[in-house]
Image (cartoon, rainbow, N blue to C red; front, side):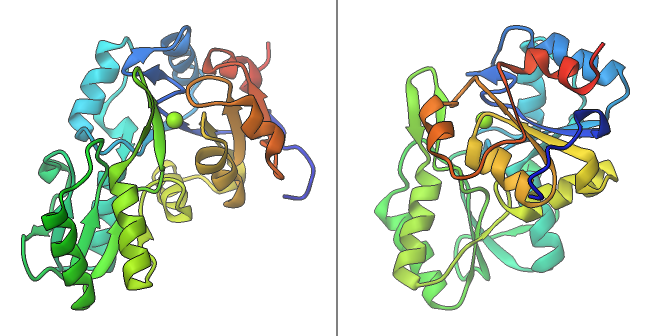
Length: 266
Ligand SMILES: [Mg+2]
């Protein structure tokens, strides 16, 4: 935020959003598999960062492979895997109620999952709203003193049906309002998410870039932590969001297909 543009050639590690950058509805965007392969072969370490809570990490890896990306399990960090890391370090031994549309147990290793009398209420994403019974159970646990943890705070995403609201984020917003408390957020755009990812890459923020299609939650959030921000004009990108934003991305590129050229110009 010094006002000077970072030099993309200084970037030695990458965080890449998946949905809207590499894929839309799990189909590869044009040139994306080739771009990731070029990043990989030029020796730039990367992590693929997704707030998707509809799928386990293993599912994400499988879908990326089916879409033509060569990725390993350890290349992918999901909001649930970041949440599990947060719970293990900040709430060791806690009893956790996890509200999620999908069974994420395999990504919540070491976390005690309960239905009642939880110490922590953990909310994941969902396309369908949670029912009143579940919402009120969570609400009453929070009134009894449970902590509120949100896997991510991306309010919407693009699917092949169009822009879609996240019911988990909506529920969390309601619970925050009703309890007058703020949730701890584990996925993007939480600063902790970027810091935890950088520590996995073993890089300081000024040597890393975040590539995303969400101006606020990917790009500007990462820039606030000191990373270089790269916005792509694919996925949920809207020119109007860019024009009305008081802060600008370090770089805007048409798609991830031209990312290798930005980082290592020939
Ligand atoms: Mg995205």
